[in-house]
Length: 519
Image 1 (cartoon, rainbow, N blue to C red):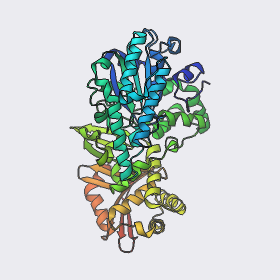
Image 2: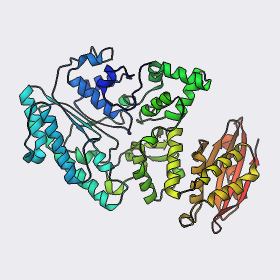
Image 3: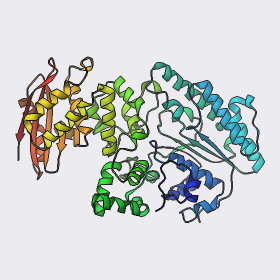
């Protein structure tokens, strides 16, 4: 079988060493024939660096690398001078280090073409390189910038001093790239492509690049990065067949399980196309098992810290609604957590209506893993809490309702005393997270026309509708479900259970659990 691309972002290596390459060049051809300067954001490990590498080889005129790909007979493959800034390799510990690293990058880009740049030129070194490349080769210049926002993101969620560094780094980048606005540079540019995870500082850094087109949310590019189901079927057939055999799946069953784990990323409000996370999908093919792979590559510490700093009500991350224009964030000092979670891939678009966007977790991999991380960061639980969570899930599944209250209380007893909060949301958050990390089909803040149900747990043959109360009683919770939420499930063929849970805030325990069977 052809090899899976798990650790390389080199287009040349993939094409020369028989890796599977999912052909994305029809989108590249659209880029080349529509405009000449673009910004494109996607979450990490979605193929941005591979796209930069692909564009580099294309503008170097390496036609044979593109044989049998869509663009092969649609591009002239003339060689152009190419400048690459890869911020995965540019140090950013502080603004002085960043500025020196940028000058080093300019110097190395120049040496690749036999051009020496004077270090004393400082911020004008970049424009000097562009002009000299054009003069030497009599061809317009290509600029490729990968992960432009890393010098800011690396310092978020680490306190005031790092926010200061993030702002200083942003100012360095703005000064450095701002030289491109000059006519002598603009007139000799062939193509510009900038990638990043976030869009919250794009405007301030590239404000002078008036023609930089942001295609991140455009429907024409919804399938540019990530894999569609058709692309999976066309390119990974031998790996799919291995999963069929291991799990005794037929084709539809296998695709359904892959979709549940790794699909669901929707990047445009104007297109309902959803794509799979490439690195997670290929890791599942490589290991021949369904597991969390994306999160194993990095822990989103800065996002967790921001959630904690803002005291965010965690169950609300499901079915959260915001105005369309709030999907972008520009202010480092006052970051809006929901748009940032969308841009970094932890939430995705599930609906759009009348200028409002509904966001939710894209798949089970993100939901379960993120809640696992949140539980550890927020509550520092002992190992035993996960065993108790497992037993709690079984109690719901097996309808052992007498076990729910003692299991909940034993679970709560594992939470360190100083971080207990005296409100209903706190307990709702804990129960939600411990059930989510088990992989149960839990949904929080379930919306209907009369309000939001606190939680739903769905098994193959049954559904639990759960409402939490604090210092009240479980009967009130049951009646609220009957009066507001039960109507949405009248037509279900599954057994419906109503579950009311009341917390005694002073005692920090559950004092009542009621379960009623409706079918």
